[in-house]
Length: 374
Image (cartoon, rainbow, N blue to C red; front, side, top):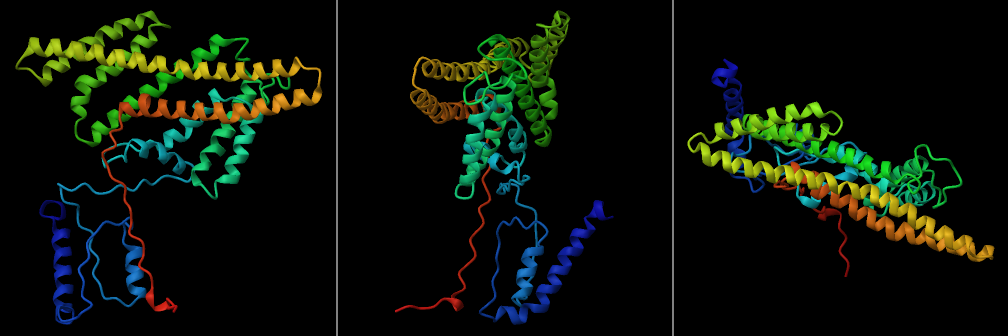
């Protein structure tokens, strides 16, 4: 009965009407009567009711469903370690009610991209310490702490300390000595990032009630892209690509069955465009390895200049100035590049940013405690 006839809702309405009719005589003639509506992040109402009770205010708090034609503001609730990365999503726009909040994913992705391009133990330590000093004044500086730590980790991977490759042995390779692996690993990472974006798009389709449409067409594109990438290692996956192509064409026809030939022609054009865009997005991640090589090359250049001098003081000054230039200039460039990859290669797959952020009103000033000055 509760589900079929909405009995609980009806009982709730009766209870509210009973409260209103009981208090209407005192409220209707009172100057303190007010009807307030709005949005709140206090989802269970405990804080609101506690504040009203504390101030001896007779009230009735009700949480109705939002109107269908009204989009509620969004509250991004993330653990403390993911909150600094909400900045990236807000650059494009606030995720709406049926969109994925990528902050937790970015808490892993952003440090990996930054650290790979800026791998150095000493320089990463400087960035980490700068973030610790600045985070109280500017909360966004928490990103420096995380990214600086990631740069230190990749510094051990590449065997680099303040630009020197002679202090510690690399856990993997020196970028200058073996550039090809350094370039290829970001390509594989780019494929994973793009597939993750496509899967988040699938989740959004499910939330929006469009999952069948996604299965008919977009799922085939995901399988086709993944199988084409896999064909580099396993040529037999091209058969899967063929099946995905047939799947895509059938799905496109099912969505527009009235003009089959026109639909097939349009769907082939759309497929080529999507695959070409995915290919370009994948290749874009090569620049992650290119920046890692550039970082190692610039550090080597300053060490070569320092070793060419006979003065120990001059050599030290060259290394000091060189590391400052690398930290400031290349740190800025790597930050911009990381942001670009997130916005234009990852977010473009699923994030529309059509929501609006919940911005609560500030509490009114208690004028009873305000001292007047003359």
